[in-house]
Amino acid sequence: MGHQAYKIILVIFIFMNLTITQLEYIVAVDTHRNFAKAAAHCFITQPTLSMQIKKLEQQLGVLIFDRSKKPVIPTKLGVKVIEQARNSIQSLVKIQEIIKDGKGVIEGDLRIGIIPTLAPYLLPRFLISFVDKYPNTQLILHELLSDQILDRLSKDLLDVGIMVPPEPSNYHSLPLFQEEFLLYFSTNHRLQVKDEIEINNLDISDMWLLKDGHCFRDQVATLCGQEFSQDSTRSIQLESGSLETLRNLIDQKLGYTLLPEMATIGWRKQEKQRLRRFKGDKPVRELCLVTHRSFLKKGLIKALQKEILSSLPVEISDKSSEHVIKWKPEL
Image (cartoon, rainbow, N blue to C red; front, side, top):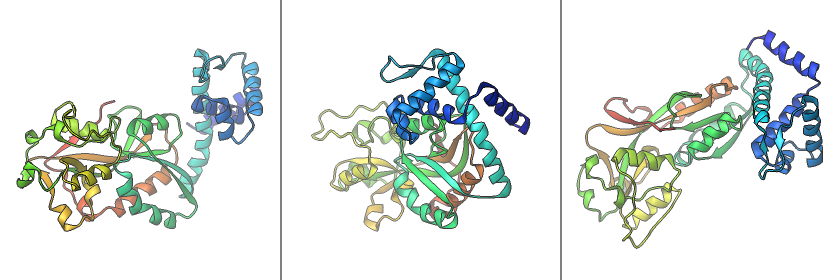
């Protein structure tokens, strides 16, 4: 959007006697679907927020929110008003970002979402070096599932996600790295005697998996070509969101699981001895920085990409892209 378009937006605001603050208020209510939470987010009292939104509705001559619903929801026309409000706010904020990028300035807040199966293994590698290198930045981190990251990106509640990229849609992806899926067995498992494992040897009902909602669970099911149905005869039935929990169960001679390679970096020799790779083409997942199509803070995000790439262990950064099976999520 050029400077002329920015001038048009500003003229419209002046002509209609609107303020950016009023637009921010209706966006906050739409995001939180609650006036009290939106007021707290905007650091004002609820009566002030309600009064300003009521004033905006009177100026526009439309009802933006249906207050009879719990949680509060936008009216049919309100949805369109809020969408335009988000676009207008983003357009004006973009002026500052264009200036920063043009001057090569790396500063400000960067709101990052990262999937739980990557966060514990990647974040410690680059966080300290990034903030040391760019002291005028603040990283705001959220550990979230993939669909939560995409939802927040679309609502401008996050600037970037670190995750497996979705298929081409409203999102852009900046590549980071690929990591293999590795098998981790208990010492008494029947498949541990094999040096390499064929995919058709796996039985998903005999495997420990993350609970529903985790993309890594979906990746494993896709890889095995099986629907997950846990063996009901098991003495232990587990719904876990932690790879470390699954790993600790296996250390107690309870079956096996699949792990992303980053989770195994730095393991002791006796643990690595129970890891197995797949025979033939290696299944991998690709990790990227994912942004919404209208994303801002390009300088910050490019700096983040560079810092992550420089922090990767040699086992990951030197990985060949040949002879692999890439997993792609479905939306």
